Image 1 (cartoon, rainbow, N blue to C red):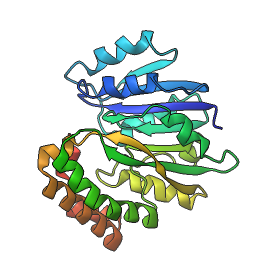
Image 2 (image 1 turned 90 degrees about the horizontal axis):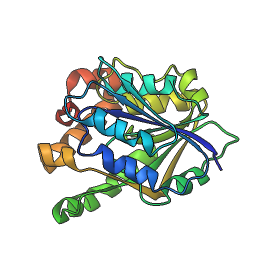
Image 3 (image 1 turned 90 degrees about the vertical axis):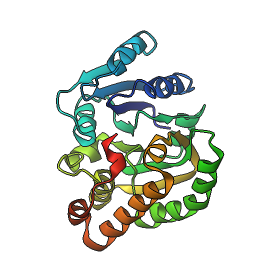
Length: 244
């Protein structure tokens, strides 16, 4: 099993969500070497202060504060400081169930270069949101599996693959994670979707813009990418929920 991992967390005003993610990482039973890298885009709330409070709880926690913002930029800066062979990119509003890291990494074949993703479920207990999600999730899973979509909210890859493709494209505002995955695959990485291993993701974006608009924008963006490619899709639309 993978025995060394650098976890890279881009943040921007995540004081509400970051503690839940960090606590869930602390609760893992992973025995390998683990580095936590929080890359903050100069948050205006208590995100940086909260991250600093966890320095006493983690044996290896690095906090980078950047004046420049952007999820791709912040992920790339974190990867530059990564000590270990495997990079674990994860959004700050995720929660890892107990034992997730061991289950997830156990499925990774160390003899190959790969890009691995897990299944996602909602963290909130809102029954309506979970009902709608349960109806649409099979469609999303099918799209992810068939088109080898790599959601940036949670993915693991080797640092050598990241360097080979020169990281995330910082000029893209949408689809930067899908582009990263597709370029990784073109560079020889194997795509693996671990359907039975799941993590929890906040529904805050759904709550902010509304369920219908959120899923409409998501599916419209996907169809535009399929038809025209990521660059033109980016010109055609901007996801409302990418602003927070």
